Length: 248
Image (cartoon, rainbow, N blue to C red; front, top):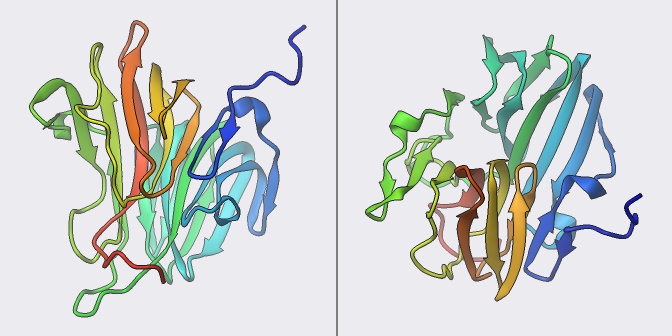
């Protein structure tokens, strides 16, 4: 029997690796008959929230975005979604972006449907309209090569427009793929591994990670990653974009 004190999860001043073995469930008003795990939150020093929701067959998410916009991604399963009068069935690899001021309803999921969410307080930009609802899906044909390395590909899931103050991308590392430099930047990240295994360097410390693991990176946390194992590694990640770099 494995000792219960063993975990790969680490929480530091400017980064965290959160493995599923340490999840503790939370309750969110309006989110019923489901398991909610808050992975990243302002309480740890972040300026975003990231959750993972596992729905039972009678599970339902009902709410209205207020200060924060929410990006919902179907990690596994499917459910019916109604936002701003538009109804869709979302399945694995599909997503919806819900801007501020919108009511949402997720219902009739298949048993065990898992959703990933990214939440960010929206920062309006003078002269730019508030973004609308965006539906989309993971599509490898829309993931161009990154920095001339055919082992790296990034798909941008949200429009690259000034109205959006957050980006969500899917980054695929084929075998041998690795970041071409140690990144040091102002953008904050929250991410979830969707496939494979990797080694991630965060603030000069090395971590083995795999499918199901989440990572938080604060601004200026140095970062580098390489895929490991026998298959591509894939993660979906958030970053803040398109706003003046100041504390609000």
